Length: 552
Image (cartoon, rainbow, N blue to C red):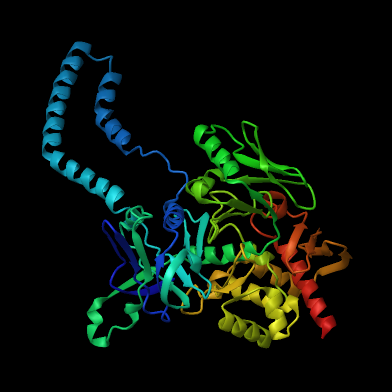
């Protein structure tokens, strides 16, 4: 997917003994979006933006050992091994010949080392320079920044696409906010920016701006602009859509004291597991401290300062726990960490409360289960049929206010709450809206200035296509009943190739698929870790179709 960026110059950072300044270059192809102000809470912002950088550079995928040097050595030794294997020949003569060859090879290797030494030295110096001085050059995906009437927030993905980071800063973080224009843009996250962030100090006046000057340059000064064309993988865009959808799923939520998060990180730093399982089991009992068991050691950490206030006992396991070390830098400046667990092996979210800033870390079910390919959480979001008029009313309301809760939007537009939630779900899956876990607001955020090709991003899912065929074939029978305090339970039977399947789904009051199970191979193998199976989707489609017909 090709994205065209056009920056006015590059991001600039300056620092001296008394002041510092950070000016981001925005994408001038987008609607004018800019911001200018001076930092009030400098150290907390420094730590938070540095943690966001830790998300960008994070890559915990398995990396096999580089055996190139060994293979070169083995190839060089092949002739030696062959000669040694032929020991039935004259051993003395063979040994003398081997000694002569070894001496000759050693002379050649020494001469080669002498000739190639400057090249090897220059190559090592170059890679050392890139690693130490220009590390950001390895990352081509520029962050997304949004300016809203009440806050400014950054969003980014890790290299392995399994971790999502979002830093929100309301305007109390700044002083002397001179001017701003609401909107979303990509910013030029240029090299050395992370190192410059480390120079922010309390005694230095620091200016922060998304440069408005980038939109006022005349056509005659076209050479001042820098064109960047990035062929972004579909997975990057699809990952943003999946994160936004997963945030709206039902979850078990609780607060952790910063010292509890420190204990988690300390244990992970001190010990390295050699065998599985590599998970954390959260034991949640109403009115009791949160307990976390680290496997395979079965080390239990009791969070005495953190009481679970949920309505029922839960036991939830999460994997890919070492990604939590990204939160380590926020411990000294955080007031608390709010954890949202959607289920065992499902996404988890950690919201660090930094006072006037919130840092959200979203982790997929496990490290190899990245946001884009394995999880289809948009399929569990509200999927009721919504008229074009309702969608337009909801979107226009968000265009005016930039944010709002579903109940507020329903009251202002006069539309039923389920229809508003479904419309918001559609816009979330289209990259136009994001759900804010901290405030519960839906916020307008245009991921791209052009409409996203949803046929490539969402509807290319083979499960949904297969479910649509099952509904069209009409081989579905089902019954629905209301379960007090839970939602609507739909039980069905679907016959495929003469074999019956028996999916059961529960749809809560917000039209979300909260729980489900089936007797098919997909569910028995993956549960809901990779989203619902085709039979669950077909059952839901058939139920929604019948409900729409009965209401017509």
